[in-house]
Length: 206
Image (cartoon, rainbow, N blue to C red; front, side):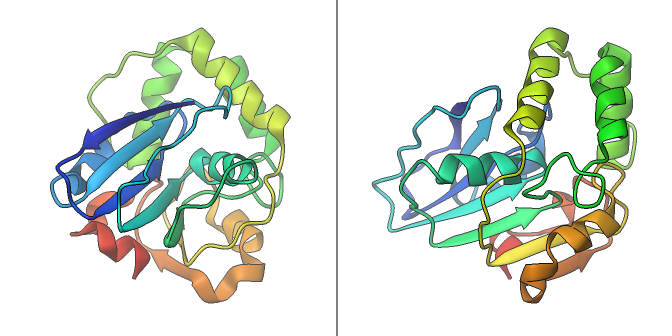
């Protein structure tokens, strides 16, 4: 697991983002100007510590596979977060009823290539994206580790977002995944990467 600051200007609030698989920090950089923002990625292991001790308030945004990764990580670490949001992800990342169906997941791993990754980015964003490089071996290993880690411990979130146009996590599966936290769920008309729908980072928690 890797953590790096996208913005660190000395505000009294920090936003920690557990990002998704293989997608860089660009979807979240829109928030970097108004909050100190720590971006977490690469879930081949979850051993990294997160130091946010100097802030009055720390919030969590977990997206896609970052939802389960965060919950696994949190089970072994103190909880520094005043508010938590889960976006387009589940505690059961690979699951026929409550996550990405295993047959789809296996097809992704087995067919992973530079070209298939560009198709994934198009599906995730809902439109064609600038070409990105991919370390195929590392990202395939990450997918295998996500599957091997299995379901994450039950974790409560203050806000949960399900995107109606999600082509990565089927929205019907996310509805089942979050049935026990239904009061926290909000729907958004957006693809798997929905963040251009939010003008300010605090709207993710509204």
